[in-house]
Length: 458
Image 1 (cartoon, rainbow, N blue to C red):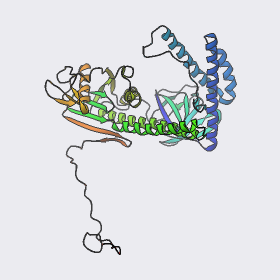
Image 2: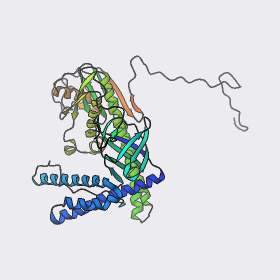
Image 3: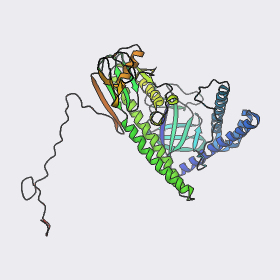
Image 4: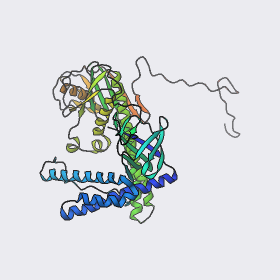
């Protein structure tokens, strides 16, 4: 299963209609959820069939059969809540998880406005691609034909369409079961993309790679067949996060100051605050996805067919801070990396990395003071120095049953908004001082530019 994200470009009339449909969808969710919440508080149970029949026919005239998608999603949310509550009462949930809460409402708590989301059943829409990056989204129940931009990479059976308003922009999320044919009752429910299978390429060799995932060094990669190692820096990700954090805090402070003093303009700054949070999330997502795509392509070129990555088990629960809770998306990173590696036919294995930073990959002993400043690890026994993150990557290899040579050459890269750039020059290339051409000679001498003297000045 893969999801394609498309940017919608509705006209003025189409956008107003999308607003009405999304508002009705959120209103259905909120009213249904409130009714079931009251039933649960009064009786301890919910009449699923009764509430489903009541609200489906109440909103069928506006949403059509798509009202059933909203109701089924709410059914799933409540059943998940009941199952989690049962495990909580039996004491089977982890200690860090508190008492679960019922499903929430689709609204902004501060403004009280509904969140604009539209759910469309898989047989009530279809896509009409016109070229590689554009096309039209047709919504049957509302007679809408909306232009979209975005590359459709996968071909397969389409699922429930989700349309969201994010940062004052409309996006369509199309889930695709890659390679699966549509049902006979819905022959047009098939998305035509570039690839009809997830694995696009085959591995070029049988080499193994071992990755320590972090934040200062987003990826530290060691190999079992070469003494070359790879470091992908994550300093730009931290810089991006803190820049947008400052923006959000500034807008939030102005908003609260105006709101506490009764100025109505606080709503404008609340909109700025929400947009800054959205941009922060999108920028970080772009950086992470860029680094993952580059790493997967590099590993494929080096003949890797299997990757072992360290997973920081229970890190948020045992040692949570701003770095690993907000900036460092290690769970999503590992998930996204596995999906991209699958395109190259490379298997991803997750290894518990606990203790790999303290253990010495040279002498296999645990040195409490082995890791010193600036990410350097020094073995007190042998005196050999090694990058601390590469030391952890070599220990991950040992836990997987492999031996790796001590890295002699490190290829360093940094993630930018325009791709991943090398920090180390290529072999045979030296850093030269740029030459500046002399300006065009003017009157007064060869290669000399003389300015007219201002009267009264010497």
